[in-house]
Image 1 (cartoon, rainbow, N blue to C red):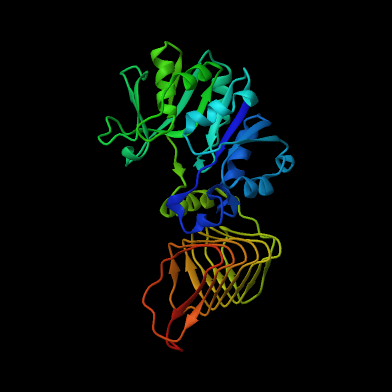
Image 2: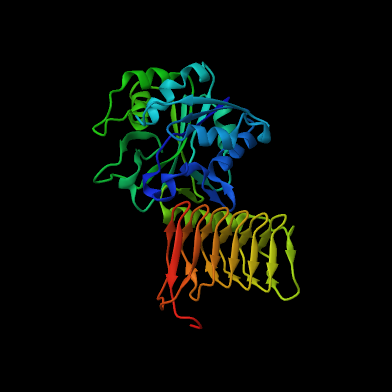
Length: 360
């Protein structure tokens, strides 16, 4: 089998972070989401992977390279415009050939990986297998209607009045019949070639499409709140390691990961949390469900349930920062007038001065 990762979206729901960075490279628990997807495919025994890229192709290619760090071979497939998931399959036919493949959206995180799913598909006579899960807002996803036996009756893309709460989670398995499907369908009202229409074509043509209902958690990391939730879930799954330095005046609990070169000085860190390489905490408090990436400084400040990207600084803040996404090369510091509460989504290279009276 081969793998196909879709990594061409603009990530508009994550603005301003994604004005300057590919959404798939934002880290969850200090590892970019795209890297997690590559690892999930590799761990399922697949080493030949294509990545469909768009405007952020140069950044993704710099970060991923040819795949050697994971022991896989990466092929980049340019998509001239975001014309839909089925279009991404269509333009990948030369890479995929006649082999079975798994298609994975590059901004999705799923509990438990996909090894079991891949094994099930590889050893079956299915022409396709789709992964579904129950969601609270099905109108935001492709939705499947199943009959009493669990067979697919109908698939609808982002219905205004959803007939089901079973959403497609962004993991699909296909054989070569999918190419007839993607070449047979027309663009939807959104101007995109919808993968739901292609799968419906397979169903209507009598091909064997199996619906697998995933019972664990799954997160589409396309919005800030989803990013924070995914970060929390992945942090809970980490096996903590302490490879940094903790001084005698600090408290670091057993659910904290310190990466090499991290320094904890007169600070408290409550897990689950991860502190990145060469990051320094000085007179700081880091609360649960927080990821601080590499080469950051948190000094005289408190932060909880947040994600801080590389080379950022938070200094001399007299109110706790919570539920925040803070981009690369950001500086947050205190200014002279009193603050109230802080909740941020800060893009790369931001410089934020917070108002506050000295001593408060």
